[in-house]
Amino acid sequence: MSWNEPGGDKKDPWSGRGDQKGPPDLDEAIRSLQEKLGKFFGGNGDNQNSPRNFTSGGSMKGAGFLLGGAVVLWSLSGFYIVDEGNHGVETRFGKYIGTTQSGLNWHLPIPIEHVDIVNVKQQRFIEVGYRSSGGEQVTGSVPKEALMLTKDENYVDVRLAVQYQVKDAKQFIFNVVNPALTLKQVTESALRGVVGSSTMDFVLTQGRSEIVTLIKKEIQDVVDSYESGIQITSVNLQDAQPPEQVQNSFEDAIKAREDEQRLINEAEAYSNDVVPKARGAAARKIQEAEGYKEQVIAQAQGETSRFSQLLTEYTKAPDVTRKRLYIESMESVMAETNKVLVDTKTGNNLLYLPLDKMTQQIASPQVAVNNSQTNNVDQPQVQAPAVQEPVAERPTIRSRDARGR
Image 1 (cartoon, one colour):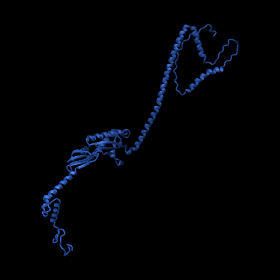
Image 2 (spheres, rainbow, N blue to C red):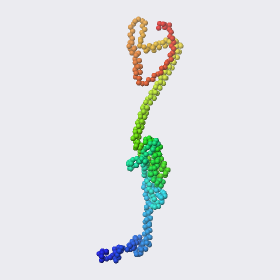
Image 3 (spheres, helix red, strand yellow):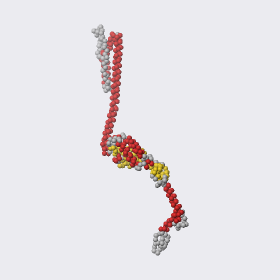
Image 4 (spheres, rainbow, N blue to C red):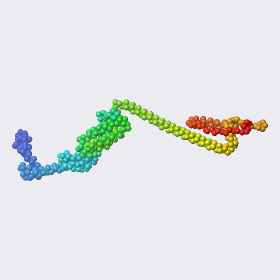
C-alpha cells in the first residue's frame, strides 16, 4: 500500500521517517550535503554528526585545492599564439609594455595584461570615389568623393584605390583612433590637392602616372607625420573622366583634337618629304653655279694666257702669226656652213663630190645636240649667265695682193 493512501503506513520518503507528515527537513538535507563534501575533501568520517567537521580541517584543505586550481587555470589563460605575419601588442592596465613576434608567448592574464593581435602582412585597401565588392564595381561613382575641380576650372570624376599595410603595430593601435578613416580622409585631401593643381587634359591624358606618384608621396608624408604606422604600397587611378552630364560633348572635343593631331602629322610628313628634296635641289644648283663659275674663270684665264703667248709669237714673227690667225679664223667660220667652194684654175674637168654625205655629216652633230636637249627637258637646267669674253683687237691684215683677194 502506498504511503499516502488511507490506512497505509505514513512513512516520509524524503526524511526516512514514517511517522512524520509534511515536507522534508531542510536542516537534515544541508547536513547530509556537508557530510558528503567532507568525505570528498578528506574530512574525518567518524564524527559525521558534527557540523564543524567540514568547516575546520577538511574545508580549509578543499578551499586550498580550489584556490590552487583557479590560480593554475588563470595562469594558463595567459598563453597565446601569434601566427606568422602577425604581431602582438601587450598592454598592462592599458599601458604599452612590448610587441611580441610570431610563436607561443605568455603574458599576465586578464585583467592585468591584454594582447592585441595585428596583421602586419595583410594588404588592406581603401576606395575613394567609388565602392566595390569582390573586385567588381557595384555602386558606381560616389559623387561626393569623386567630383573635384581642376586648375582650369573644369569638373572631373576621379576614382582612386589605395593599398596599404601596417609597418608598426604599436603606432597603428595607439596613435590613431580610426586608421582606415584617417587614411581615407588624407587620401581625399591629397587627391583634391594634386588634381586642383593640374589641368583637365593633363589629368585625363598624359598626366595619369605623374598624378599617381604625387598622390602616393603626399599620402605617405602625411601618415608619417601622424606616426600612424601605415605603409602605402600602391596607389591606382581606377578611372578619370568628365562628369556624365558632359561626356558626349567631351567625346566630340576628343575626336576634334584627334583630327587636329592627325592633320598635323600628315602636314609634318609632307614637310619632311618636300623640304629635303628642295634643299637637295638648291644645293645641286649652288654646286652647278659654282662649277660654272670655275669653268668661266678657267676659260678666261686660259684665253688670257693664250693671247699673251700669241702676242709673244707675233712680236717675233708678225707675218707668220697674222697668216696663221687668219687661217684658223676662216677654218672655224667655214666649218659650220654647208656650202662647198671649188677653185678650178685649170680647165673644166668634171669633179665629183659626195655633197649629200658631206651635208649629213655636218647636220648629224646638230641633230644629236637637239635630241640631248629634248631628253633633258624634265631636268632642271642651269642657265649660265652671259659673260662677255674679252675681244682682242686683231691686227689689220695688209697684203700687196689684197685687191686680188
